Length: 312
Image (cartoon, rainbow, N blue to C red; front, side, top):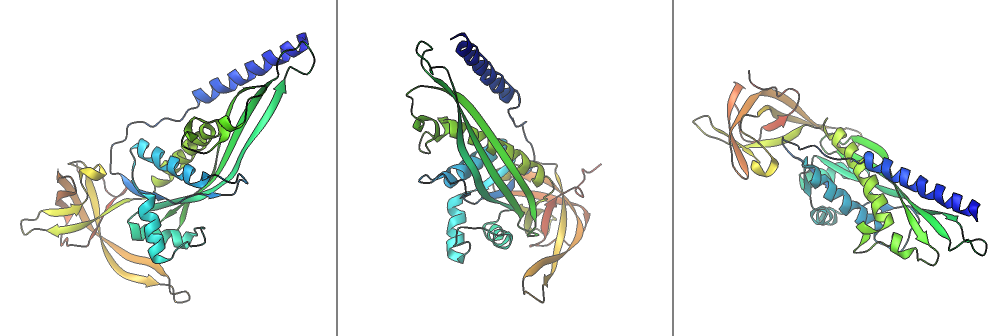
């Protein structure tokens, strides 16, 4: 009996130590100021072997929610994404490739598209006590483990800019006679289940990688009007987090480059023609003035990148 008690005490201490360590490593998001980039999340494939539940949709919903929480992104709804895919007959098999991801993202106006798979979603149980008369009820430590395979495509270049594996684990006690259902079911209370908590940890790690990868993707918009007075109007304003005083580079799209073997577009030549600075921000658009360069016109691409340095 003493051995069983010691084993139980060690099990509880072990679980408590893991829980404390996980709390210390919890990922948080510092307050973000700057243009919000447009991003979309395709429904994840369920390759975990866990059948009979909308696990892929639950994971994708959670990723969308955490992306919004960070303040870095404007997340395009999956309903719009699925509607465009259906209209264009893209990804009908349920799988998304680098090529289809780039095309989908361009059609919905996203700068990046996130997709991937749940490759592991399972439980592990360690049992202590209760094996002999007088040792009390069995107590088990139930550990949930979730592994996500995450990919992200830059829709402008069609290149995969993120390929990572994100893992989440969560543990709790289970007394003898308690069902697994309360720990792992995917439903309206998924976030409160053991599997849901492990999934959220994996998702937050995935989103951390998404933010870091998106730092290399320029924020882009377009000039929608140029007045004779020199005022330049660009698409997006407060809705995308723009602020007065920000400086953007302006590019003129050139000839589209076509791959002669496949007929696929390889992008367009882009010529930098100058810089503009935001002077006024409205809800859906912003007003700017030229800093350097000339000849700005409707259709020119506005980009926030390392080239867009503040004006001295």
